[in-house]
Length: 443
Image 1: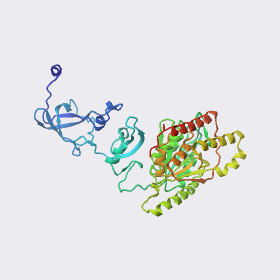
Image 2 (image 1 turned 30 degrees about the horizontal axis):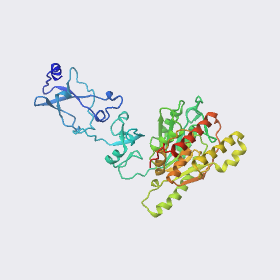
Image 3 (image 1 turned 45 degrees about the vertical axis):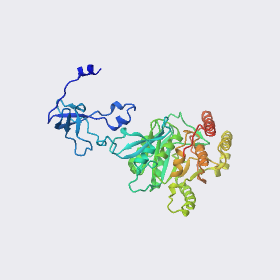
Image 4 (image 1 turned 30 degrees about the vertical axis):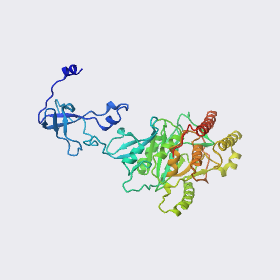
């Protein structure tokens, strides 16, 4: 076979002063060779001028002064430039002479569990590289190699501090009416409207404006769950108006469900205290002080024993509750809605146990420690993820506080038979999954 191959070989020589393209296998091609579309990675860099010939098959190139790579290459890595010398690709400077990765992680886009190794991986955005060059990396290896990079906060902690301002979450459900502050009124096609225990969720630009205007310190994250209307435009109008430091937008390519959207938002958070709320204005944003005061009261007991403990490290959850409004709701709602509400509460009691009277209110607050424990384990993506939050809080022994909030029913919601069946299915799935050990809980 060697003889046959040698017949096709040809001698390639270059002279000092010639220009050549440099062929390099970048880091991503070496470590992720099985990744799809890897053939689209750049192959040739340069052109670069030959400074010196070393031996029979090696050449020294004039590389950029900032390049952390040895400038001598074997002839097989070079391709002579014919014609004009236009640059085809700048040399990637994040590989040193040992082909080691020298850049720093900048942000975490997403998490996943490797089905083969059963270990958690993070989709990492690297400093100085475009978003499409983000790579999946083992979380434990990242923590070892980059000790200052806080995987939970998605930030590089230069000052050894992970304190951040509180974060508010607003969730935009797909195909709901949107009253935009600047774009007028738009409508979805109404195919995926559903209700959870009498709670309807829609996107409201005016409510988002109220959130941003009233809250000077906190940051707002708006999660667009694959909407097909004008939600994206309204969200980015807030970013342009209030700056990216105050408002962030997470766009999901397709509709995943409220539970999955909130989970992704929580795992992209940087705050010590995190609040999730629906953007329809059913619960007033001013009620967040009630939940925050209760969390601080519980945390004060822990910090009194050890002043070095931060509130973000103490797992606490606060559930906004409409239970105090139940008597009034029973008098104004249709009889079948009251029947369904009572039946749902009974099923939740049987599956998750007592502790919280209203699990479905879309107004909940978590310390960062509690949010990490809960949302890394959440599996339900739609109607009943609130019940799973309650179940996991009890499993971890996280203190739960139920706080009465002002709530008003927003018109436009509807409860379909399909929604009821899906809610029952999710509750049954959760009960079976945890009881027989199919769903593992990670601490």
